[in-house]
Image (cartoon, rainbow, N blue to C red; front, top):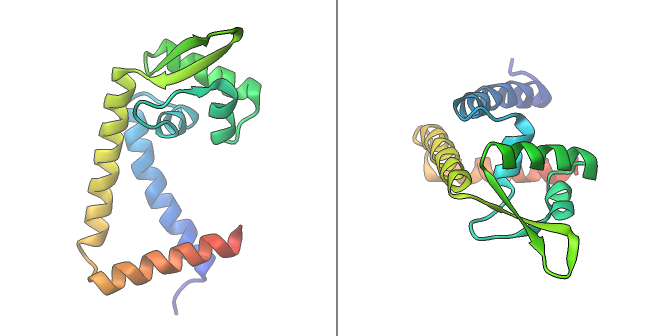
Length: 137
């Protein structure tokens, strides 16, 4: 008899978490740093508060993540003209490189999963996952 849906989701989450942990360990990133790098797009500049909000962090927790990403060379901070307290954040070349490597690893993982399914199965899987996400919002 198949497991409950929630048990299957937890098992899937565990397997995906292991893959994510491998990627984070490769680049010596905490979970928050990993999410921070992925929260920015190439060429995008955001304020510190926008950055923290995207990651669903308090401003003080967001500031600590920002400081670590800057010290590791993944983020660049530039002052906003006219407001000496405000900063704009963007990914450095190193940050963009790590982001691209993370994306490559995620694409490889997805390719492995999807190579075992037909196109209709892939579409059904995506639709059902989107449905579950919508239900749980």
